[in-house]
Length: 125
Image 1 (cartoon, rainbow, N blue to C red):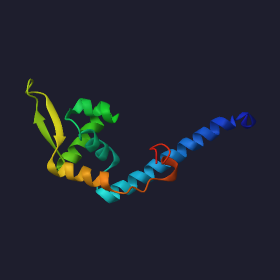
Image 2 (image 1 turned 180 degrees about the horizontal axis):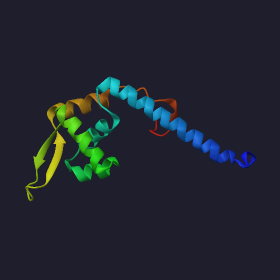
Image 3 (image 1 turned 180 degrees about the vertical axis):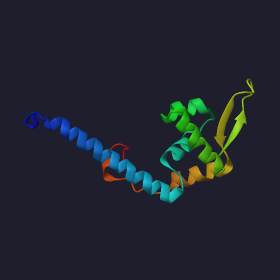
Image 4 (image 1 turned 90 degrees about the vertical axis):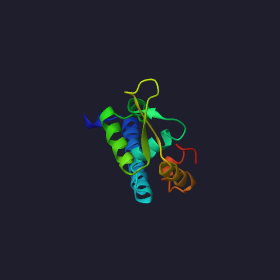
């Protein structure tokens, strides 16, 4: 049975493993540099141009509502985002960057990232 292993499939799986490891290494470096997890950084990037509700952020980030709520709480606790009550529906809550959040995002944009070689083609470097 082991003789029937498709080398192409094994190679693909190994490449995915290598990409996963590269992303993991990038996230560790990112967290050490900015005291932010990757999801927290992506949340800040998402709020750079507009405000979003929690459900919209979950969709943009590709996270469950529960995980999005945890990321929001963490970033809010750091003072990087603020809540805005909806204009038309006061029950609706939106999130936007604070001045501190804008400064944090700007420091990330200006920084030199140590992108793992495997990820450079993916992010066009």
